[in-house]
Image (cartoon, rainbow, N blue to C red; front, side, top):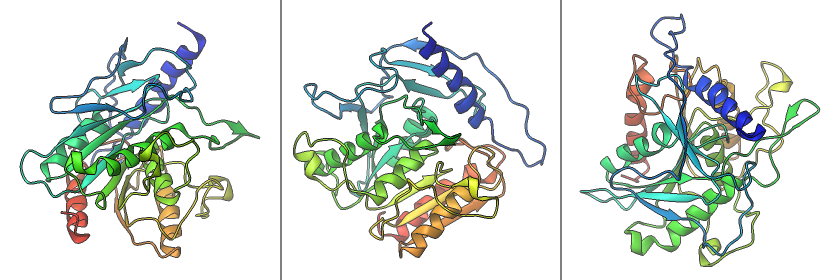
Length: 335
């Protein structure tokens, strides 16, 4: 195993899987972690039934590679279990895709671009991807799950983490949004009703794409002339927002977090006992949006931990937050 692959595999095991183990029960005592063997297999991730995987970029477009270079794509499972089941990821992604899932009955015309988490080491393809799309299409919406370029490590300077100058996941999310709008007629969707739903690292991407329209890559075609700003945003257990060097009572954002008064209406979901991404992360972001005049709603739950997706557990958040999203979308005229 190469040194880089060893590092990434270890981070997948410790960082992302540890985050998934942050769930809590009704008791104040953390639950026992049910570890499972971690398995990695070479091969390109394939969608679940009903999904159509679409390349984001023409094959002729040279893309900046992830930190793993031209390492072949691989899939695997993390540990511990989430909601009593394994969760799976894709990594070493050099050619990003979006996978489309269409509603089988009523079609509202609304679309959600789902941005899975994974700490920018991998993409949590089922827990925060295809399982979310299952719910989205049941509500009469089209779902597009983004498999973005990973891994991309965030460097440190003077012991402090900083955002990469070119964030590959953001480029891929902007490209996907442009494609959805350009092809809206072919996909049977309304180009003015396309939102994002992000989880953890993906929630950071959802915030980033909400607050900037500048692209860090040269336009490839007409898709890159479309607006990349979503029409609404939903963030679950968001990350990398808060400058926690300022002290426990500070809600100051990191210097790389942009806030625009043109950001779309935003719904934030978080658990107070999230040990991976402190509840002050979304609080800081929500207050900044509010100060900029952006409509923002928060749904905070006492327990739930981190990386619960839509898998029901004993924690109320895991069973209730999808209904909160549905009601919020109805209130916004999206359903």
